[in-house]
Length: 362
Image 1: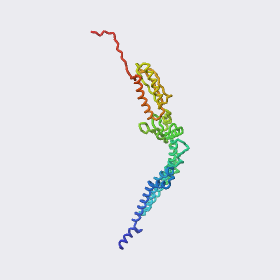
Image 2 (image 1 turned 30 degrees about the vertical axis):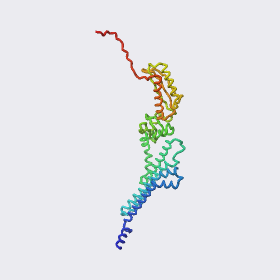
Image 3 (image 1 turned 60 degrees about the horizontal axis):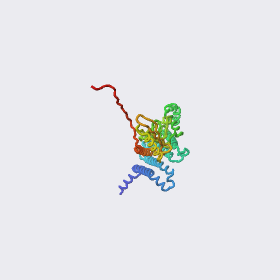
């Protein structure tokens, strides 16, 4: 028994560092567990006991801060465990100095991370006074995030011992060089501000600009992102967008269809007039067509056909619905042409062979 007691004393006594290693490992595991629990369980538990927070900006804020807080808990556990490791005196001093600096750096970064998360959730950063200008609100939130990140970066540089004041003064002296190098960036920035103020289009609108047609996905400091019909993402510099012609298809009140029907030259006049009258009746009587916009006119003579111009507007602006209406009307026009005995013309050439007057007999 005495031998067993002496072994336990050697393992657990203050003279043996084994218990300190185990203690540090246990503390780290506890903070790791707390970090994971907070990351995945704390928000739901808080909302369970505070039901009035559910569905509000407070819930969004709690969820946004869950990852930075969980990372902070893990950082504290790792720092505490490393700080108390039973290492030689020559190692402990430098390690603790490094941990102190690292803890300040990472904590500053986490505060900046949390600040950016708050910008996305707190109602004051929704800028409600801007109304429906979602693109402007999004850009202002980005500006606030950039400022938070810049202050966090400056604070981290200060912690590392860099002369932040001198650095800022140096940037001021080199401002001319920077401005010349960033001329295009500044041009795109101001062009983006013009687009946001004038609002020729909004996020989600279908536009044609700078030779690109598609849906606007985002407006950033430098460029406008457009998702084309081929599902490719095209990034157009704001200066190019604002300098060119912008056509906003989402602002149209109705959508136009226009085409020409070529009729054979041997079609009798009565049949042609009856076909045109039936075509007008077909279009004006369709519920999807704006009756006052229907145009059916005999416009002239082409090389191989007599041309009838057909133009109408649909009440829908949705492209898919517009195609469906056009398909239905085109099939009805086919039936109408067959009913009136009128044929579509196609390019053709007539060759006349005459007698040359030469005697070809032998």
